[in-house]
Length: 310
Length: 280
Image (cartoon, rainbow over all chains, first blue to last red; front, side):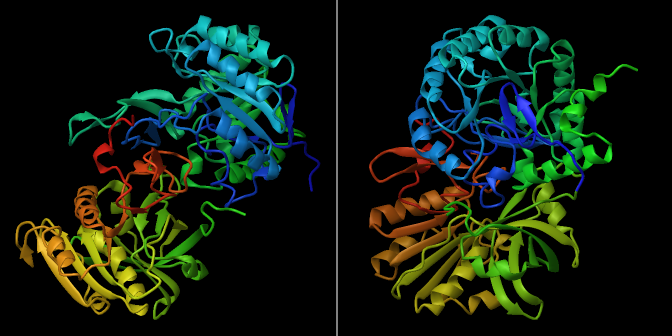
């Protein structure tokens, strides 16, 4: 066995491996636990949870696109209280490391959610999903508004104090992602998740109307991987000390390696799990093999390696 | 420990048969021991397009029948597939000896009566496929099995000769009258119920047909187990795309996943009018 250090850190949170599920692509883990042991991967990132239970959008909610898919779920979920009563204890019982993703409709809701999480045992970090419409600002997505995204993170940071690391998930659908990143880092983000789905749309040639009931949807899958690599590269270049949890179309070890070279300290596998329930575990094994084969002594050595001087 | 996907396995299967039947393909797969866990109503999710394909999502198909032992090998599964989209066309183009990546079995199964009952099985198009496997099980439990199949036209009826052995009666309806009786599968249900010939209805087919049957079964207070169809990305319960509005018995409606809480659902609980509309 090669002496290789595969562990990673996202701010103060330590993980034995850098492979994670992606929020919204693993529910709360129960469905995948039939296929592999959840404690074998870095962490389970849960589906974004909101304050109250939500039914989500009507169907059709998805469409397959070239090397990708569009989804428009509308954050269907049980609400934070049911989630903390049932899902978290179950995940803790599985010895899984857990990153809880939260989403709110206004700045205060994020803080209320953070307050509910503060004293919960067994959570490694909080991922703040700011790709939601801000109902207090004409539905403008927080992640596209430097002031709103900063305000959200500021509120969550104040509420959590130093108890839990905060990972802020950014959207690449902005003019300058580095500017948004700067704002949330100054507000207290420990790490960044890059990238959320990319806004897209499909029109059905039979009905001659938008295919999704929600009209627009989030594009994911291999189609968006170059967008993720670009965003990760730009943000890592600007803030080399801020750890990045990279994601976007990763389906094999080579894809994950690309994100690591661009500057990711951790890699989430999302849409690939829909096609292959064991995708996270497979990517974890393949990435390790590639890193060892390339001669890296640790994952950390490879993070951002594409930025090295000529 | 697990309550979700508890029988599911990811397996590599070999195609041992692929022949055209009317507008459909009958595909036989050797899946091995996992065949013992498959029940009528369950479905399978299959990777399509090969390793470097741009078709990134699995395709879900109802399991038509399984056989523990046959001349094609131990543990075979039959699928009836309409080559309609790019994924199903690819699948129908695969030759004997090719390997496929499957996750199986998935979803809920049809409930089987504990005592012999009179069962009415209704299939639309190739939705009839899983009903033949169900008919075999019902017959072996001493049930009377009447089957009604329908489609727009003759070539879209799937009714294999060997399948007819497991039913007591079979009526076929086409909307253009090209075979069987001119009309719809829903036409004779009312009379059969009034004659006391129906204790339970099982159905599989287009959503409009399932909704129409539910209306009749609700009025007559007959149990209706239907296998629903909603487009899904994962088949294992994580993507939340295949949801339907279903009532929980206390008047509350929740968006349930047709891959986990279905495909077999209680037709009386599905809020057919609200499918594809915003939940209140």
